[in-house]
Length: 191
Image (cartoon, rainbow, N blue to C red; front, side, top):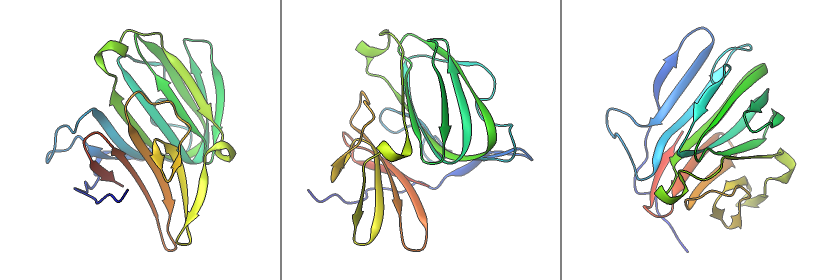
């Protein structure tokens, strides 16, 4: 099946300080919402401060975190402890609620995609999954390396998202592009 890009959204700086830069593609002043997407963020931290480093709650959403570079220790109210490094992904289905924190061990660069859960799943038990870089489906297409983190893009990703969300990392010859797509509405966000 051939798909075409309907729209591209450029991330705008949401946080810029000495410890962290966060670019937000959704929401922005140009577009407040897009289907089930809550946030589409690219972040880069310097040192061991920044996004998610103190305990904080989530409820009614699912969060995909993809760590391009860095290292962080995840701990949550479900009893999970996990270390994420370069190329790892994690998935939180917050459901009726989860508290977690991410303790950086070194500078990080990554992407977070937050989507609203369907109404019937908002009160289900919370779940946490992590996937090491070597378990994420990877293939070549026209000499470009493609990692399918969630959804389906020639190959099926491994994250169990509630919505038909696609998150793919493509390493082009001269640059990196991260993009996600909600298949049910057919719009894209690029960073």
